Image (cartoon, rainbow, N blue to C red):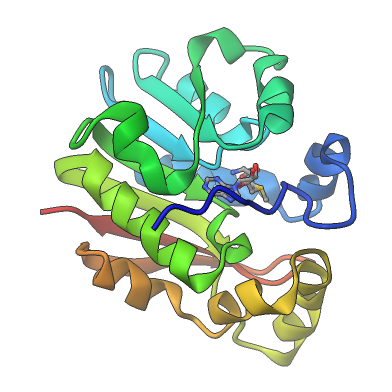
Length: 215
Ligand SMILES: C[S@@+](CC[C@H](N)C(=O)[O-])C[C@H]1O[C@@H](n2cnc3c(N)ncnc32)[C@H](O)[C@@H]1O
């Protein structure tokens, strides 16, 4: 299944230009650093950031290992324009593309690592599945998946905080994340060693980091 419609970075109500300021409130530096730690980029690694948005994670990974080949993919040309204007942007390859057609954009088994942050909670369940299947197909055997996104909201406070995200992105696509569906969907896509490695409480709900491998 290919879904060409997508929810823009800040959801239905706020323009993309406010995205970077808004996301700072989510303890962004902490969870992005944790993602980078789990990615542990190496020279010559091909690392694909799916739904890269304004490029903060792709640029961080490129700073951590400038010899890695980082590719940022996003369906929204407006958000990619912001990414391309940032310092260091020339070190990353930016591509317009949707998350469930990665092999058409990049070729099958062409990536060592796939990362994605704050994308799947905005997608309908069928699209979460098709994006994960596409991530599996674009990874080479032995490749690594690292996802940071709103996951199981474990406490009343985090469930309350997550309503901010549900207000912006709607309940239908976001609630399955809050109910903890991602590990099951990642496993269904064919990944092994699926783990929720970190849980970071934020003002908009807890952000989990999931890691997994393709055999
Ligand atoms: C909340 S933003 C997150 C951006 C960035 N990853 C970050 O961590 O700041 C979600 C991004 O996912 C993109 N997106 C939405 N649906 C997508 C899909 N099906 N495939 C790939 N990207 C998608 C949007 O265009 C948007 O840039």
